[in-house]
Amino acid sequence: MDEFEEGKQTFLELVRTLDEAVQVVIPTTPSQSLFKISLSRGSSRTFITVHEDDILDLPEETLAQEKTTALLQEAIGSL
Image (cartoon, rainbow, N blue to C red; front, side):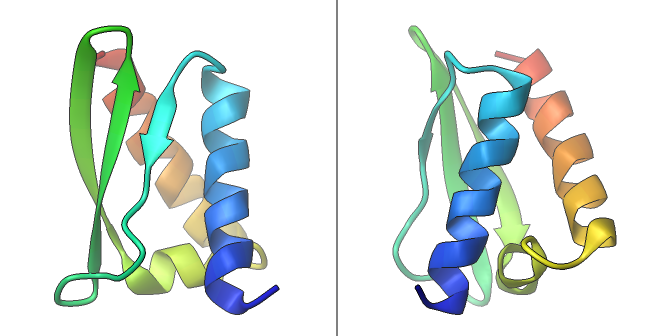
């Protein structure tokens, strides 16, 4: 598994631990080093922007995990 796939899997696991009902769409390539990720639950949808480095660092760096978890908690709370 390459570095992006590991980060993507870690991101999806973080979302599942926060809310299993949330569906996630992650683009296959970043735009200007940013991923615009769609989070939806039922008919509600929101988008978050995550830097490519944060996705790549998720599997190994606690700071990236904490930062992303806080972003996800806020975004999921708004759904």
